[in-house]
Length: 308
Image 1 (spheres, rainbow, N blue to C red):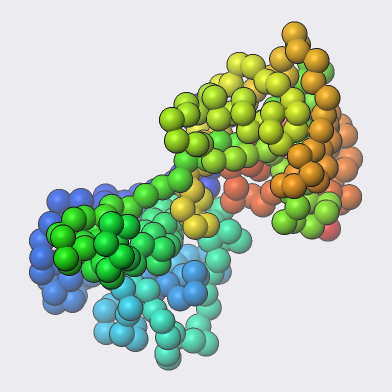
Image 2 (image 1 turned 45 degrees about the vertical axis):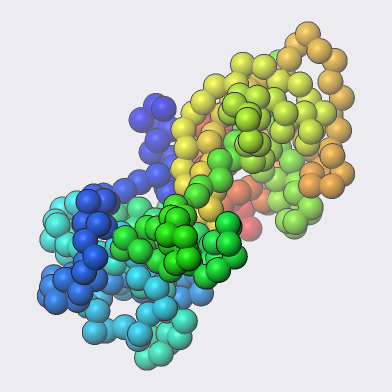
């Protein structure tokens, strides 16, 4: 991954030591509650408490309502944040915001590109692990309720003692170009009809990333592609994806007919750079927090400013 492309991936930024060995200490949360330097990141209904419109609020344990779940995120490495290097940080899932209800809360999709490296990494980590807890409350083997252990990084089946570990769903997202170096964008059935983005899809069991690129592009567009090239990745905790960015070229030796699948993708369009720039305002592009936007701007050669 080139450094220039890495700089385009907001959710891949971090300034945090995950301090994984500390997760093994059974009394870790008791230790942290007694540590006056420890800080908590409150999460409520998928949003984080904000100190300012572009920074997270990290507060002492006694400043939050009783949490439904705690997860140890690690120790700050930031030299530019208010909290000193080494500050231990815990995510707290709140079922009731209580006295914090009237405070400002932020959505990662909207503000991820505006946060500092440390805050972006904290927010993405917190959402990812808390979303996993929300969907893995029961043992896949016995169906009984599991309990969180190891500072929130494992769930345990109390009847068998078996451990369930966090999962991340791998998904490819591809900047497809043709022989004229135009980029292929599609409109998803779940979006506004004028929103266009890159084609993407989940990697299936027993499938390589490169095979997933070829399969997904053909399934959604009818286009056969070659030369998949990995660009970079970023987490997308909505709820649990790791987006793996690629470029690929239309296979010049195979006749392909551009055909939306009609189920997930309703429309497909090729854009030259001039055509895409001139279409802004008519169409909406993916937001600046997404890897899709980063891949499009990498192809375009610079920033694209949305027109209202």
